[in-house]
Image (cartoon, rainbow, N blue to C red; front, side, top):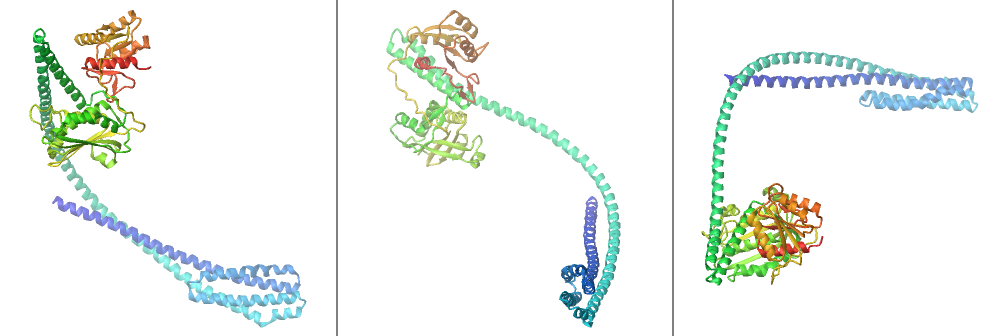
Length: 620
């Protein structure tokens, strides 16, 4: 029943629109017809006025000619001149006005001929008078020809006026008829619209009641859906929390597994070294070396975790990647072994990249080791450089990618390749396809974190049975690149110059004692403080300090705030920061602040000796 009512209402509404449209169109048609009829009436009146005007001009010309002949006074010629000057232009206008009426057009042409002939005779009489032949001029005036021309012209004008009078009556009647039709049409249309409006109004009332009922039903259904959605969201939140805890457990388990392995090496080796110190020095030294290797592996794992989380402090600079790759070639060949053929393809005209050179070297080593492990029976490993432009279409299809120019470093192996499901998880932390004990699963996640933190992009292209290519898109630097620094081997550690004093500020006592012992071993005079407040007090008691070596994360104030206070009191002091992790004291957007000297924990005595000497020897 409701469907039928809706259909009837829609039909009535459509009919109302049709009637309104017909009313408007009919009104426009009748109105335009009436306007055309009125225009014809006005046209007829204008033609009648033109007829009177042209004949008046002809009469004026005749009056002027007779006055001149009688009086021989030239001033009587003025009506003649005015009449003849305007007569023929008015005749042309008359012809244009009656051009649509063949009969009137013939009569207008006939009048024009009579008018011209009459003007010619008037001109002849005027000329005879001017020449003194008065009798000849009077004869022209009295001649029957002149009168006959005027009579015929008058007859033509009368005939044309009669025709226009007939047309005027006919057109006026037509206009009145159209006006009556318009009135009747508007009345009928108004009645039809009123009836339809009444029907539609009643139908709209029924619709409103039905809509109110439907709205109440929808509100009830919506409330039920909201309750179900809230219940579903609660369940989904619980599932997400379970997945999150599962991921955290997996991450924690992976870290615990790797750190326990490394700590087992460190603790076991140191325990053996302690027992053998008095009996077998050579074996004790070997145990210490093993402990150092385990500790270094633990430090590398920490660095990889920071790289994965994009929290490692970077020191990017304009870098010639071709020179860096060329300088690493021999190291990479030794790393991947003799079973894999290694080659580099360096592009000409390569743009400079804005990147942290040390982290890029570590990344390339990671990728080359992964490529080597993918070719256990040998193969070919290629490192290639080039320029690339990623357009807006590519950027929109890849999250966190900005369109622009990049320097590309590709590492390609001819191993077994990766299936799509492995590529999708390749950058996940602790995901690895290697057997147990063959890798931590942080290598590619470190690469991903480092490149993303640097503002670049990394992409894996692989085909099963053919090989894999990992492409690093590094941000381009618009300027001159710096050559990577050559890491020359040191015959002996850089040591202190006579009398150089270092202040060590570290809240962790054992780390502070280790740093103090290392610096004293290098020949530096060292004073140390467990916190920033004690350090500021010591600064007042020691007139000369060459270097402040401070931890960043400390209670009371951080290392950056301490350094600012020290520099305010002693502007010439050099500053060297250290920390195992920092978010924003000296690092912003993942990049070390300008002119900041930094050494990451943990560090060896060699690294400490080199960094302290470089900071003290730096100019400025």
